[in-house]
Image (cartoon, rainbow, N blue to C red; front, side, top):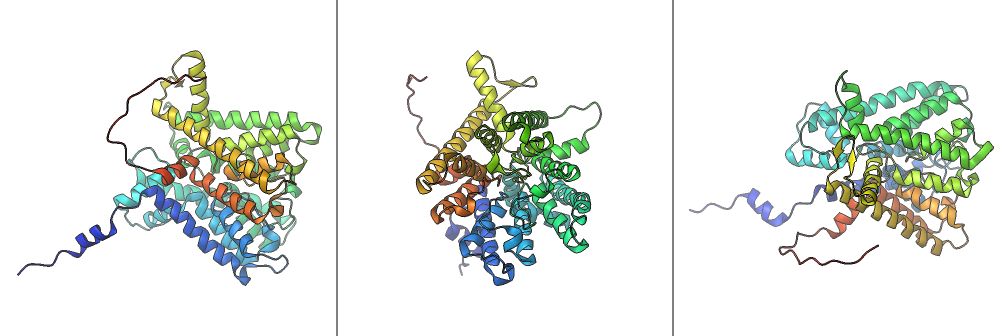
Amino acid sequence: MSRAPKRESRIRVSTGKRVSPGRLIALGFLSVIAVGALLLCLPVSHSGGVRVGPLDALFSAVSAVCVTGLVTVDTGAAYSFFGQVVIAVLIQIGGLGITTLGAGLVTLLGGRLNQRENNLVKEALNYPTWDGIKPLIRAVVLLDFTVEAAGVLLSLPVFLRDYPFGRALWLSVFHSIAAFNNGGFDVLGRGDSVGVYTHDVWFNIVTCLLILLGGLGFFVMRELLRHKRGERFTLHTKVVLLMSAVLTAGGALLIKLTEGGDMTWMGAVFASVTARTAGFATYPMGGFSNAGILVMCVLMFIGANPGSTGGGMKTTTFFVFIKSLRSAATGEEACAFGRKLKDETIHRASVIIGLGFAWGILMTAALCLLEPELPLRDLLFEAFSGLGTTGLSTGVTPRLSVPSKVLLMLTMYVGRLGPLSVATLLTAKKPAAVSRAEEELPIG
């Protein structure tokens, strides 16, 4: 008597190809956005003081999950405490990633991850190797919540000066989550981001530290904590620390020069730090000069570091791109700290920069067609803020038409996943079986 085929084998045949980790991560973000938008549509999420339509709720959910901070309605004024909690949770999920957060909770509770789950985490964190995935996940989650808890304690004295304890505590919790995850949201309900604390030195220092630590990257933070005297840092850490220092100091100097006496040095440093995908503003972006807007766009485009809560094209990508330009101009090898950069790394960096810049310009052009009454500089700033998942705005976001808001949501999603990742998901094909003949083509 013949046996029936095993159920497990039938499942393999019927399900066909497995979904790639990249697609699962993309779908995971879409799922969280959908759930978040539905929750933000509920009347219990609204304060009643400001009308929140379905598009506003969806825009807030996309912006929160993509850790951006662009909003069509003021978060503090439009959403109730429940709605603000939903947004805070979405920012937390978006910053860590749903895969990393879920896997981290499993490992902290003593559970095990299979090979497929490890692969998902590796893809989500952009981790270069399979070694030490489980300890890495645990370290990422512990670091995240430890820094955020410290941020709450450090921010609390600032808010206690202006609010009762309960309100001050919630403002501290929300601000710490938003700052460390480079979210850019605030629930002050004033409509001017954190402009009320422009000259508060302690607030500026604490916020900048949270932003910098979140944008530094979990790999780098872990290596800094484990570093022993006499040991050498990895190339990745060296590049990240160098670029973070250069961009922060250089950005502050350029912003101070372009904005002149109206901008304090503390404000210039804060603007330089927050442009690296954080989205808080102590000075209104609408008051920046054209030169200052351009500087901010460049900083937003470069963004934070790999494996961090921040977005943008990433500092290491920009570093490799600059090295490749120098190599092409001088004929020398592209090297960094005594190490030759791989050709594959150089090619990947060039593609990411090219795709990212092309998307930013394309979205700017589309917004110009849809919003002919708005200045080019404001729309350029809006497009690159969404692409870099920064969340800074000159104030035009609520005035955009429905098609423009949809394009901006798409831009935030592309910025969160990465232009190259999105292009790969849309055009992934099997390698050609036959290699075609090469031919020279004059260029330059």
